[in-house]
Image (cartoon, helix red, strand yellow):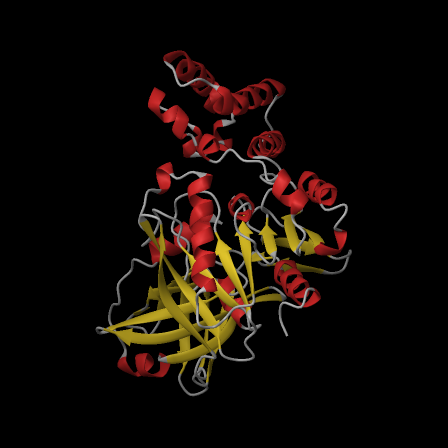
Length: 445
């Protein structure tokens, strides 16, 4: 997925060139259509507009990752009338039928071909929601985000979105989880963790205690809103699952949704992902032994010259043995002082006690092909923790999904005579499970 996004971003740097005014005038507005490959399709919506003498295409791909499913790129119209712009799959070359208001074309340099077909539609009706930019105080920092408020059939339920590991800025204004949930009357607050995007603070040194305090303050912010929310829950993604369970120690969430959020401790998750990752990357027994040794070491090593030497002696062979690719940059210390700042040491946590004592609705969604947060171990632990409270636990093991809930592009053979092309997308089971969970527990009308 990262490669696809990088390609899209590179293409988005193109500038608006020669503009055929007739084509440009016809393009402006809202279009619906799809990518088409063999006998399969994937929906896309495009809104063409002009700004400062340039044309842009705002695209919506609802089956993509929530943080990247809405984006805007520049458009080129060349002297032949060909329309070019970047998409999530790469550059498209399109042609307009000005009379029937349809656009046809395909992705550039793709074999077999991936076609694109768009039809112009009526202007979208006024939105049935508002998106309010918010700034939330959390001790000595400020968190930036957006509060999505539905107008149509609003409930008294709000969900806070909590992102995963890393210091990349989460999308908050166009987040697809927020867009999806507000259609069901759920208010959603998406915020950027400290030190990312427009939030102040330092993400590089933040601890799980810091992030949990921030989440707690976001909940307090919602409690004071004039909307009078009666139920405030949280949706934690990946390491955001640890953040929400840590925050639950001091704040009482009415429900929790974990999307590939570990129910294991940080140490156990790291060890499990090392073992499963060794299979994925086909490491030999010696390499596996060393990556397990290194995993324990980042938790236990002393902050000293010898400690640094022990870490670096293993790292010296990591690339040759093929396990360096299992590490994040924040798993590597280059100086003695950086040892205590390793991510696992700043976030070392076990959610066991919180989950054992949690007596409200909990949904755990895991990916069948996820080697980072493996489903078997995490679902088994949740069943153990909720054994006296099973009516509140729902778990889903999503077929074919990886850690981002993405399902790969591939040919699917149904039988000897029938096959189809499966487009890259986030599994539909994720949205289905969330809606069913909210309805089951009376969190939406």
